[in-house]
Length: 270
View 1: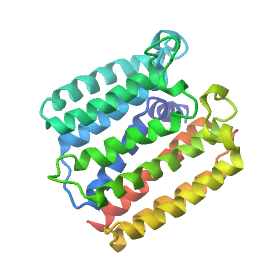
View 2: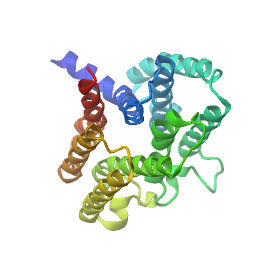
View 3: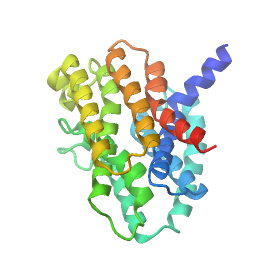
């Protein structure tokens, strides 16, 4: 049992779980737009998510390596593998895709690493944290899969807005859980408007997403059912996650929600 618990802690704390959930959103986009994803793109998205989240989570490395040496012994080889894999696959992408992924890279770097002593990093900018996270997820899981389309129309931009709002909602339970420990300078949503209003905000945004689903003409019954499953799960998470919720359990179950939509699409295509 202790061995399984250790494996679970590694899986969650090393961001393997989160990287897989980013990949689930990426795959959902392909299902929604009837596009076939390729192994190289899946590998690239997983690798970038793994690198980005661990870089943000464990920077500065020199200070955190002392408290979690076992984790670094795993992250260094895995991170190196993901880095070289990403660099290799990046070379074969179109210019548009390269520019998009480079933008994500810059956002991640400036999110974690201060560019100037007075300015700090993007994470430390008041009220900006959740928007940067939602933007990176949207670029990687919604814009990147459609980047090489000949032309975009307003429907695509509505779709990108939908994904941004959905990721914004997905981040709220974590902001609720971390409200007590987060620095006041971050200006997170619960710090700005309180825990109860944050839950209500998430509920209103879910209703807004439902309206967008009616506007976007990709509303076959399969897409609607997948959205309803994900929406219900996030609604439950909004009202069950608390400030004293277990970190690992919250990370695992709330981050698992995109897999519901992915699993639904996989089952109906069997």
